[in-house]
Length: 57
Image (cartoon, rainbow, N blue to C red; front, side):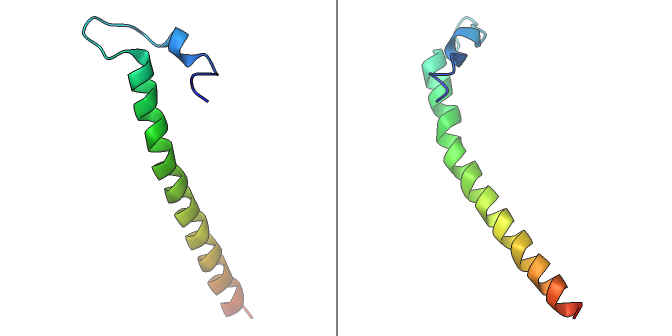
């Protein structure tokens, strides 16, 4: 998705830096971890909301 968004063209180039495609690959690999963390947070918030709602009854 990052490649198709054209981010390679706008990434700053510096001498000795990795090629943009390697940097984009590293970014995209971390997206799976971020998604899993987001799922865990949503589940926790839903559980806490259920506990608070049931204790108000």
